[in-house]
Amino acid sequence: MGDRELLNRYSGACRPILVTGTNRSGTTWLGKMLDLAAEVLYVHEPFNPQAIPFTYHLVRPPFKGHFHYVTDSDREATTRYLKHRLGLFYPWWQDVKVRPDIKRGIGATLRWQAYWKIHRSPCRPLIKDPLALMSVEWLLELLDPNVIISVRHPAAYVSSIKRLNWDVGPKLFLPQPELCETYLQPFMDDLHALAASPERDIVGEAIVAWRIFHHVIHLYQKAHPEFIVVRTEDLSRDPAGGYRNLFDRLALPFTNDIRDRILAYSSANNPKEAGRGRADQIARDSRATISVWKQRLSPTEIDRIQRETEDIAPLFYGD
Image (cartoon, rainbow, N blue to C red; front, side):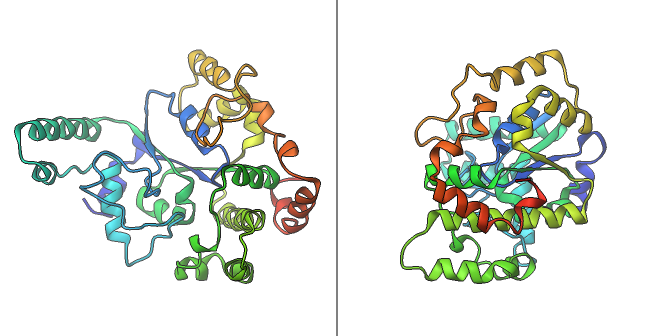
C-alpha cells in the first residue's frame, strides 16, 4: 500500500485526526477526550520511539530521537512504520519466526485478526503525538488529517519541564540539519549557545524549546488556516463548551454521556497536579492546572520567561 492508497483508505468518513502541539500542553487529555467518541481509534505517539507497541520487534520506527522531521531519505520507511501503527500492516510470519511454536502461532493469529478488524472497520484514527509536530506537513500530505494543535502558556510549559526534569535541549534539534534549515534558522544561535554551556540551564532550554515550537505552530497557522489551534487554558476553564466545539468541528457526536465523562475528568475533586514524577495523569482539576506555575517558579524565573519569550508569546497570549 503506497502513499496514495493510504490516503484513499482514510478519506471521507474515515478521515484521520491528528492531535499535536507543544509537549506538556495537554495533548494526552485532548486526545483521550476525543477518543470517547465511538468512531475514534486512538493511536498513541507513533513518533515517540520510547512509546513502543507490543509488535515493536516487527516494524521499528526509522528514527531514534524526539521531534523527528521526516525527510526524503526516511519517507518510505516512516510510511511503512506508520501503516503498521495504524493497524493496516501486520507481518504474521515475521512474528511467528521470533519463536516458531504453537503458542506463538496462536498469539500471532489473534494479533493478525485484530489488525484485520481494524482494516475492515470504518473507524477514524486519532493520532495523538506532540512529537510529530515537526512532521505535520508530511503527515498532511500522507493522510490529509483534521489537525488540532494544542498550545500552552510559556511559564506553565517551563514549569512543567522543570518539574519533570525533561530534556528539551539542543541535542533534539541540532542533529537534524534539514529540520534546522527548514524551521529553526532564527534559533540557531540560541541552540548553539545552550550546547556550548558547561552547565545545563533547564529553564533556558525550556524557553528556547517553547519559542521553537510556537514559531513552527505560527507558521502552520499562516499556511493552513483550517488547522484548529486550541489553548489548553481555554479548555481547562470550560471543558464542556470547549470540547463540544471541537466535537462539532470534527463532525463527532457530542452526547450527554461524553459531556459527563469530560466533566468528571476535569472536576475540582481531582488532584491539581499529577503524582510525583508522573506526566500522564488525565483526571485533574483542570482550572487549578492553569496557574500552578505561579507557585512552582520563582519571581526571577517568571521575569526571565516573560522577557525571553516576548518575541513570540504575544502571538498566542496577552500580558
